[in-house]
Image (tube, rainbow, N blue to C red; front, side, top):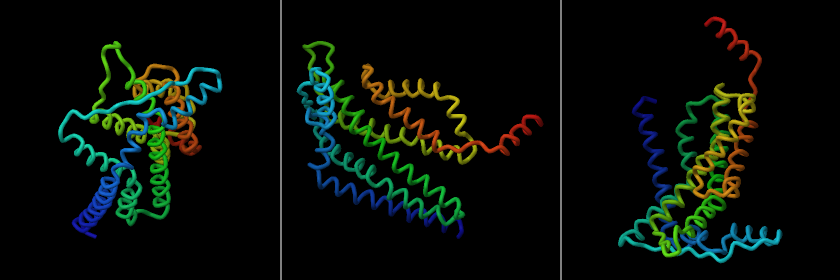
Length: 266
């Protein structure tokens, strides 16, 4: 095909993706109670993480977390309507990510060789799986810990917290999408290894450095300073590093010889 024919095919792919995203957003917009029931579940002490922590504390004869109820308020007249629209869009984006990736795959795949197609399919599959794992970790672990700490933190007893709807929704999607992106580390490592940029032994060599760096990243993306929250986020991130090691390939002997020859020539 000519350049303009390729451009026309890309336009069709983007148009289909936009229609799918719009359709899903409309569905979520209609089922408002279901969608916001998920969003606001961490504001109540019945949330699964809080109940799990209480059980663990009870098993070791410690006091439970106690009652928790975060009240979210709205301070802007049109905010609820526009947040309803934006939340529907974000939900649709998270749910439809594999479908959109498949649409892009239909555009790219005709230009690839069979071996390249197999590698690309594996990459897309791993990317989707790890993205959803990151979203789940963000929703069931990072965000509840964040909202429970910041929602109850007070500099003085006389200064009450009033959490705005806009602030809550912004924090919710920021943390969850950040975790979704961070969990793409194994996929990125596998692709870089495929291109010969990193190898298994390289990641093994810098294990200790990676552990410290990942703890720093965990401290940055978690607002709480307690060791429990830090390790609850840091350990999954380090687990991703170990998964990245398993997904990378070993450096072949002939590649070592080529590098040594290049260094000698220099």
